Length: 111
Length: 132
Image (cartoon, rainbow over all chains, first blue to last red; front, side, top):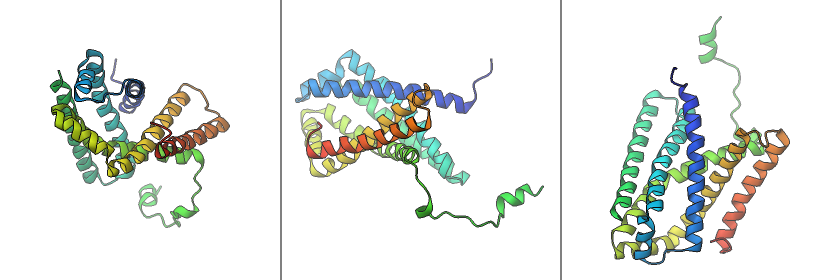
């Protein structure tokens, strides 16, 4: 079997990631409203609990994929100069990877 | 026949006067979905920084809480509440349309109005303190 066409692959990833992001964010909002972390200890304990820590880790990776596909599509629509487009792609990937590593590091630090 | 010439040196008048374009509600929703996504993207690094100082120490946590409650962040918060709500609701609308719900023109227009207005209502609720 051949690999699916690139556009279709992105289309599916964008929708599946959207579902996870929406569900997890609504879960976090629910947690925040009903069990608001007001102290440092509570905040760390919340982040360190396995469900929240893994859920947040998956959230960060999923968010990176979702942001990459979305921003890439916008750049492909509006930036027609190939050199500029590739430069912006590289910058985007750099910023996304940096954010991802930074956020995941915070998650590991609370364990 | 002269395809390449037509693509590059077409002399027909081009009307790009934005004031004369029509913006149907579905187009407004689509543009705002992109715009709100870009806003959320640009706040990523700020969020990473707040997360990082909040887990590092007691004082870092206090600093993050104080920053989130500070006036400039309240203003940014208004923009973020709108961007988040609009992006989420418009995204759910797109997912439903992919599943064949509300594809018909009239329904699609109504749901676009609902998304655009609800995002504004939630933002208004946040500003006046009704929401959150």
